[in-house]
Length: 388
Image (cartoon, rainbow, N blue to C red; front, side, top):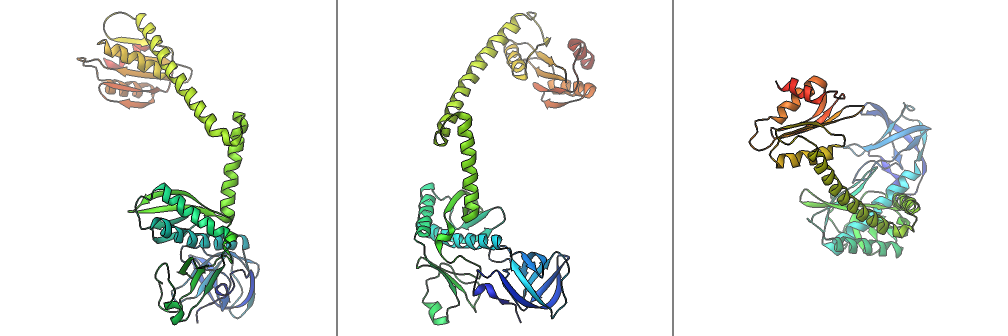
């Protein structure tokens, strides 16, 4: 006989007593089957409950094909026939109830405001997602669905779960078809949403606090909507508030002014980057003016890779190969450029340099660059040695 499910009648029951009817295992761990339980097994996108049985930790709850609920234990438990006390991890159950109720509410709102029917949902440890049968939902419609869901949260609607008789069931406008043909349990959120569901739910929508859509992306021709609610939602919003306040302190502004401060910082950064590029170009011209006037350039130029690239590009524009390096205490930055008509193979030369001194980089025949593992004492001699 399948395990009697106490949570179908009272999702808020935290403790219970039951009789062990069988010992088993699940994925190599000891497990027990009870005659009745308040533990919800993983199903319908909702994770299984955790807690304790007789003081032994329940690490997972699963359902067998025969309808038995398997309580996976951290250690072996008593023998069949023993009476045992069960206690739920209530914080986990309460969040699961809110997540599942929030999913029903948001699924109904997405259907109402965006014409997007729910195909599946996953209420995981780190993310809550709803996959809906519509590709590319505009932001305005997502916002409208979120707004409707939160209006219904504020309305403090009653949430009811029961097993209607066939006549009553036929008169209900279910949001989706049942997955079973008998013992169909329905969860109703006020008069707004009726869905067949065996999961655990809040008693009223106000227990959700708020629902927030935090992302939407295309997924297998559908849209995957990521959301948050209740305690998880509060933790996320409070965390964002903490970050925003910390940024406000750094920028010496109110939290609401952080976006404007960041925008100013970005504009200032862009202006400085433009100025730096111009100065680097001037410096490159000065460096080139100090170099011999004809033929390939094999030179040591103090500076960063960007300066070497700028000098190299200008030399190539003047029809000259550029074999440039900038050594420091930990290694040597190398930039190699080939001018039009030259037979220099920059990629091959880089491989020879790296083979001799070690380093990381690469390139093609016309251009290569990288970082040698050691400082180079005599760059022209090294280039002449490896290229002969």
